[in-house]
Length: 216
Image (cartoon, rainbow, N blue to C red; front, side):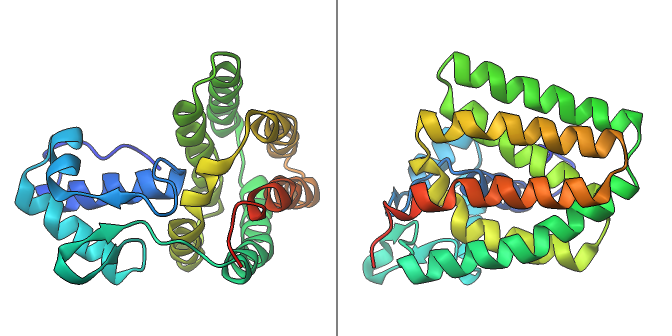
């Protein structure tokens, strides 16, 4: 997702948007314990705006707020994780196909820059940089598809499955750039069918490797 410019909206909205993006991209692994103070310090937001943002994420199921104010990133069951991925393979490829039909040279150039960033992060072993660029790559495509309701649904799915991406191995991540390049080629030629199939394959390639880490 695009970085949220400071002072363009209230601080609690900025904190919510940034923490949401971090959860979606896999910065926090399942089960990670959260502290309002540590989050506030790490992301340079005030304590109260950070607390409001976390509470909002809690209502969306992205954060578990337990008794005595303990907070953590939820741990999905294997069935829940598989169901989320199944929904992703139904929704996201359709939006990618629509994006391909609306693609232009400026959009393709942006995607190429993001693919290059991911490839460089693999060579430099920078997993967080890879995960953030991967999220930006996918959501650039979904915004190009310009289906508002679908974007909202996809965001909710990524809020649930995003933490699982922390389990991606270097080997798993290294598989994606080839598929990302296929997606970019489809966008460059306005090939909706190829965009749809390549994006579905990109989602599916990591499912089995990630589900190994998910409890029953």
